[in-house]
Length: 189
Ligand code: HEM
Ligand code: HEM
Image (cartoon, rainbow, N blue to C red; front, side):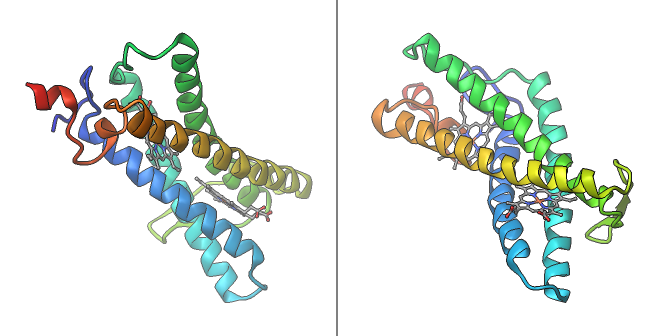
């Protein structure tokens, strides 16, 4: 499997980043909801610590992913797609990039405005990016909560589109993103 993307398929760096970030985002939403609903105590603090640490790693992964994506053109979409479908695919993908960067940044703002120290799994300290201020904390928490619903909605649409490509249109779009997916053009080669 090539490291870089080709016009037919995603390279392994893009695939690896896609699936690790996808898994991390699902775990992060679960941890966020769970932590919010726990009573005050050491378990709540620990779950939030994992949530914040993993969330900062998602931010780093997204920054690397954005860089890699800008240096590596995406595989081309099938010719059979109508212009609005191509537009919808681009909008969803870039929307997910924006959401997955805004999400950890808003969390980082909550933590900074709450004046909590932030150490990513005890490996390194992260500086504050906002002054200690209750209004900023409340605003960032509302944004963080709203963005989590936006992510759920857009990912739902994204997964539905991937499944439609595979089961209805029967093209290579899902297979070429799967870790060991073989694509039709390779079968024919
Ligand atoms: C991909 C990254 C992230 C996702 C998907 C995510 C998701 C969530 C979700 C679903 C909640 C619960 C919201 C609710 O029930 O209203 C939450 C809460 C929270 N998250 Fe995140 N989060 C991410 C990154 C971060 C980061 C990096 C930090 C801090 C450095 C952070 C700090 C918090 C805090 C402090 C809360 C509680 C907010 C409140 O008090 O209302 N999150 N997160
Ligand atoms: C939280 C979960 C997920 C997130 C955040 C996410 C995000 C993304 C993003 C940002 C892209 C665009 C890649 C780029 O332009 O660099 C992408 C591509 C893709 N995703 Fe996901 N994804 C998620 C889950 C899934 C799942 C569960 C599936 C399969 C059922 C899937 C299938 C695909 C496929 C097939 C592509 C490539 C589309 C193409 O070749 O044009 N994704 N994903």
